[in-house]
Image (cartoon, rainbow, N blue to C red; front, side, top):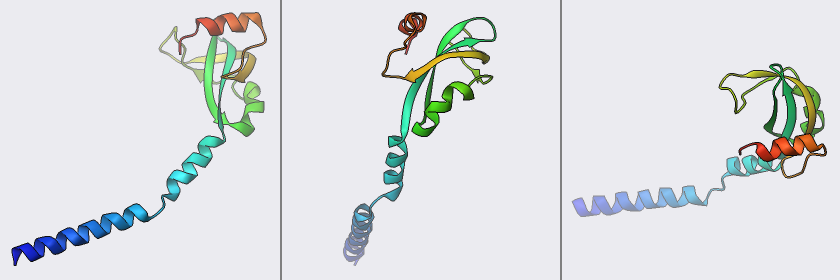
Length: 114
């Protein structure tokens, strides 16, 4: 009798997990679609304390064109300090895979750790 109960329980457990595996995961598909619309960007900025830094962002493709205007006044963490410092001015923002156009930005980008 115990053997029959164990066999039936194993059968229903296997059936349940097999049916769950067959159901498509729509949440994963939605997350992949959202991730496809995101880009990585880097910006050369001047901070309120006088230092300059390269800051990195991951944002929607549609928001990239307005990134330069939107981050002025925002607080960011830098490698030099563990406190957040306000952005005073944005010199340039490009996609992370692209190179900056200004020489000063390229030199600072080369020094920046990733």
